[in-house]
Length: 153
Image (tube, rainbow, N blue to C red; front, side, top):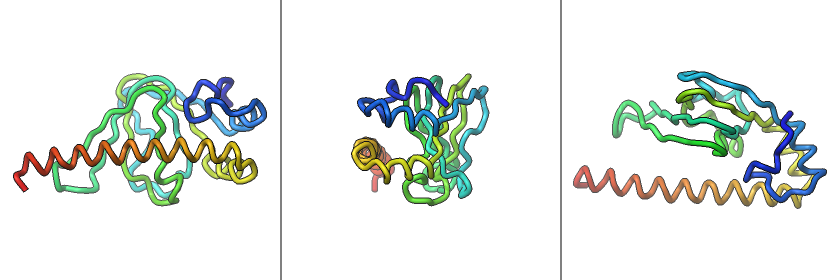
């Protein structure tokens, strides 16, 4: 359980009852440099994660189009695992710690149940997830343009 879900942008502004319920769905864990916290293609993990403190790299070896590893960096307060949480698909990438990391694991099925039973709070959370995904899609588009430009396609 966490004592401050209000401090996380995903849950900011929700009422106290909602925050109390969400806090019960959260667990905090500490990890060391090099630890794998999410494994690519893992279909058994339906949780959502928030990087509380520290830095991680997102590594995908599923495509050899550009290189053997595609690495992105994520820092404090970032949401991780949101696509597989929404779609129930296997994890799309591996997440590896860069230095010490404090991670919040949110019971994915429990959060979905809560959102269904509390549609006002569910709307707020889902809207924030949608904005997050839209921003990441925009970033992916910029990276794709750079790759295409560099390869003279």
